[in-house]
Amino acid sequence: MQIVIPIKQVPDTSKVKLDPESGTIIRNPADAVMNPLDLYALETALRFKETYGGKITIVSMGPSSALRMLKEALAMGCDEAFLLSDKAFAGADTWATSYTLSTAIRQSLSYDLILTGERATDGDTGQVGPGIAAWLDIPIATYVARIVSFDGKRLEVARLIEEGYQRVSIPLPCVLTVVKEIAIPRLPTLKGILRARASEIPIRTKESFSFRPEYLGLKGSPTRVVKIDTPQITRHGKTVWVKNPEDLSKAAVEFLNFLQQRNLY
Image (cartoon, rainbow, N blue to C red):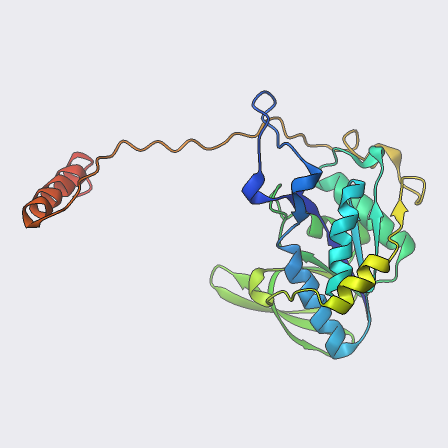
């Protein structure tokens, strides 16, 4: 079983800052982390390998600072990794990103199962996993909450949908995007950390594969993020402090008046 997991480096959500002039995210490599939702794909792959055997390869596209994130994945138990890093890849939207990742996967790896997180926490689109499946022309199941069974050729999975769960049978090779419900990610072991530190992770550039240059990076992206705005929360409310029974009665009257003024009562 050959398992491939594309992962992404994203800004730490507790340290996200916006450029006030451009409205775009300020990406500081020092504050970057592995996309938290990719951890569930990693854990799913590790459990699958423990049950059925196989090999797990991690691939990412980004700056050289992403090597630290890839070593984290190796420390958790993945077998190998490589990084796609080139100025030609910069500014890629989900279409160009999925093209770049899928091309590298197709030309350098054997794959039976490709696992991704549900979405990335910075773009929040959930489009790269389906995009990879489209470029590779293989089936996909999204929002997978549980792998029910595997017979060596097909997977039966439970997809999380609005009404509950949907059972789907899907042949290999395929792509699965997984949700948090599927597993609880493990922590790296000391042995894994030492192995990861000693590992050399290759960096692949645009010259490493037969890419179509017009599909790469910002120039190859049919969509643009023009501006990102921070939501403004405005509340025109009133605070009533309740310190005794009399204040409680006044608060109740104030609350009823508030509802009546807005035709809510």
